[in-house]
Image 1 (cartoon, rainbow, N blue to C red):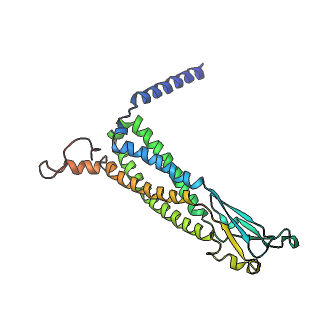
Image 2 (cartoon, rainbow, N blue to C red):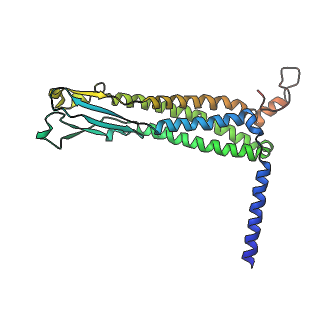
Image 3 (spheres, rainbow, N blue to C red):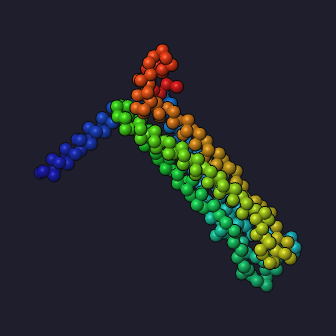
Length: 260
């Protein structure tokens, strides 16, 4: 009997809490800079990690020193640990050595790519959480200084980490392009049979999507950095300074802190 009453009480409380949340829902925050910029940040985060993980390209190598040359294909995909990718030599006269010898590519960019994608996903989730607070708990957000300060500090950290992760991934992409150009990185020179078989790379990976991912990373940094001003205006630091500045002496007029 007691358990039944407790269950009914819990159900009623959950329904009341859900109804209260729905009653507090408002799209007004989306009309303010902090709201609609958060939607833009959410979209840009998706583009940042999606353009990185969706890449599926390849390179091909063959030989020009014989008529029975074999073409080898090496797949390149996220997380770009190409040091585990290989092609088989010799590329000529394979009948004498059908199994051949595996030649691995020199170096990948796994760590920078995974960090960039992980951070992009975390930002994506944070944007969802922030939008829930804006839309359902805006009154609490404005009433409590803690929410605005936490939002500002987290956004400042995210801005810095966008710079760090984008810079690391940009360098990782440079390395990836270098080590998938087998002539430029000197891999062919380390293969004994290539001196006689005249090994050549006939196809190069298409990194257009990865170029876009780096651009989205730095664009995210700029958008998050720009939004810091609007979040700062929500904090008590800005409000206390505004209240302490007399009107008519260059002080800001009272009103919505989200005004530009």
